[in-house]
Image 1 (cartoon, rainbow, N blue to C red):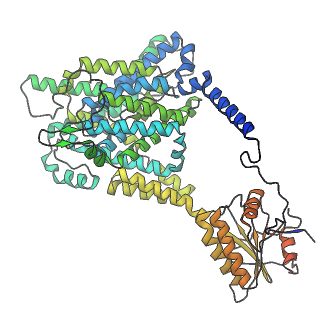
Image 2 (cartoon, rainbow, N blue to C red):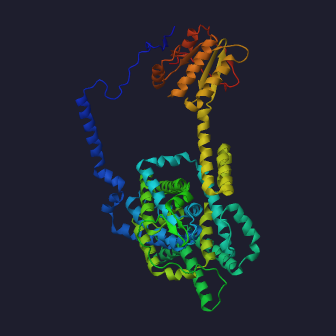
Amino acid sequence: MFATHSLDPDGAINMEQPKLGFVDEDPDMVNIQLSAKIKECGAGICTLNTLKKKVPSLKWIPKYSVRDLQCDLIAGLTVGLTVIPQGLAYAKLAGLPPQYGLYSSFMGCFIYCLLGTSKDITLGPTAIMSLMTGAFATSPIKNDGTYAVVLSLMCGLVQFVMGILNLGILVNFISYPVINSFTSAAAITIAFGQVKSLLGLHNIPRSFGPMVYATFKNIGKTNPWDLLLGVCCLVLLFLLKKLRTLKWGDEGEEDIPRTQTVARKFIWLIGTGANAIIVISAAGIAASLLSQNITGKLTITGHLKEGLPPFKPPSFSVSNGTHTYSASDIFSSIGAGFGIVPLIGLVETIAIGKAFARQNNYRIDPSQELVAIGVANIISSFVSSYPVTGSFSRTAVNSQSGVRTPANGIFTGALILLALDLLTPLFYYIPNAALAAVIISAVLQMVDYKIVLILWRANKLDLVPYTITFVASLAIGIEYGILVGIGISVLMLLYPTARPTLKSLSRPGILVVRPDQGLLFPAAEYFHETVLEKAISGGHQRSVILDFRHISGIDYSTVMGLMQLLAEMKRRGLGVILVHVSPPVMYSLQKAELPGLVISSTVEEACEELHVQEDSSLDVDDDDENQPLISKGTK
C-alpha cells in the first residue's frame, strides 16, 4: 500500500517552511544586509551601461561614420518630403489648421534621435492619431489648438510613466485581430471622411454613420473642379507610388552601368516623393487659376499662420471673447481620450518597431520606446503639437532609403523647420482636394481584407473579436470601438480561466476529476459546484479523487471552494482525496489547514485509501474525451 498524507493542524506532511523576511535574525545584521542591498541597487543604477540603456544614442554616436552621415542625410530628407504634405493633410483630419501638422512633425524627430531604440521609426502625426485627436480634443473655438496641445502633454506624461514602470507589456493583451480590425475600420472612416473634400462639400458630420448619410444627401452639390482635381491626384499618386516598388530583375548583378543606377534611383525618388510632387503641382494649378482671376473654382487651404511656433508651456485655458474655458472644462471634454490616445500611440509604435526590427535584424526595447514617445509628446506640446507616434508609411520610406541610425530624424526635423520658416505663405494655394487625395492614398493600404480568410481557415473564433471591433468602430466611433475590442479579447482570455474543462472518469463508487488548467478565483465556485454535481448525479453518490497534475498554484477563493466541497461531501458521507499535488499548492493547502483534507501521491493510492477495489475496465463519462487519467506507478 502506498503512503497517504493527511493535512491537519499538527502538520502531517514534512515540508521545509520558507523563510519569510529576517525573522529571528539580529537587528544589526538586518540593517547591514539592507544597507548592502541598497548600495548594490544604487551601483547597478549609476553605471555607464544603465545610462546607455536610458539614452540609446550613446551607443551609436561614438561609432558614427561619414558613410552613416550620407545614408542618414538621404533618408532624412526623403522622409521630410513625405511628412510635409502628410502633416498638412493630417492636421485637417484632426480638425486643426494645416500648420499644426508641421508643428507636430519636427520635435518628435529630434527627441527620438536621442532616446529611441529603432533606427527606422519616424515620429510625427499619423492618420489614426489625427482622427483620435479630432474625436477627443476638438476645441469649441474655431481653429484653436489648445485642447489638442493639452492632450499631447497628458498623453506624453501617461506614456512616460508607463515606460518607467515597464508597462509596455500591456500591448500584449490586445489581440492581433482586434488591432487589425480597428486599423481597417479607422482607415475606412478616414478615407470616407475625405470624400467631402474630393467633392467640395461642406458641413459634413464627423461620425461615420451621419457622415455617410450627409455625403450622399449632398452629392448633388459637388464642385466639379474639386472632383476633377481630386480624382486626378488620386490616380497620379497611385501610379507614382508604384515607381517606388519597381523590380528591375537584375538587382543582384554587379555590372549595372552607373547611369542606369542613377536613373533607377531618380525613378525611386519620384515614387517616394509622390505626395510632395502632387501637392506642389496642385498648388501650382490653383495659383495659375488665381493669377488669371479665375476664383471660386477650387477650394484651397487659405491663409496660414507664418513662421515657427513659439516655445512655451501649453495653456490650460482658452477664451473666445465672451466665455473662458478653464482647465476643468478642457479635461472633462477630453475625458477618456487621456487613456485611449496614449494606448493607441503605444500600439502603433511598438507594432511598427517590432515589424521593422525583425525585417532588419535588430531588437527594440518596448519600455524605452514608451519613454521616447512620452518625452517626445511632452516636449512637442511646448511647440503647439498634437499627439504623435510612429508612422508606418514614413518608417517604410525611411527603411527603404537605407537609413543607418536614428540621426536621420535631425535632417527630417531641420527640413520641416525650414519649410515652416520660408514656405508657409505658399501653402495658401494648396487645394483641399489634393490633401484629401494624399490622405486617402495613405490610409487605403491599411485596410487588410485578406485577414478574414486567414482567420476563417486558422481559427474561426478569432473572427468574433474581429467582427465586433470592426462593427463597433464604425457604429459608435473608433475611439470606443477599440475599447469594445479590448474588452472582448480580455473576456475570451479569461473565460477558460473562469470555466476550465473538468475531465472525468468513473468507476464503481469513485469519480476521478482532472482540471485542464489552473484554478483561481474566477473558477472557484464553478469548480466546487460542478464537481459536487458530478459526484451525486446519475442516482448514485461517489467519492471524488481530484487530480491536480495541471494545477501550479491556487488562491484563497480556491481554498474556500475546496473547503465547501469537503464539507458537502462529508455531509453526504463521501470522501475527497487530492493527488499529484505540486509543492506550491501543497504549501498553500498546508497553511490553510483544511479539516479532513487527504492528499495521496497517485490515483491508485487514493483508490486504496477510499477502500475501492480496482477494476481495469473504466466507464467513461460524457465529458471524458477518451483521455485516461490513471496509470500505474504515477508519481
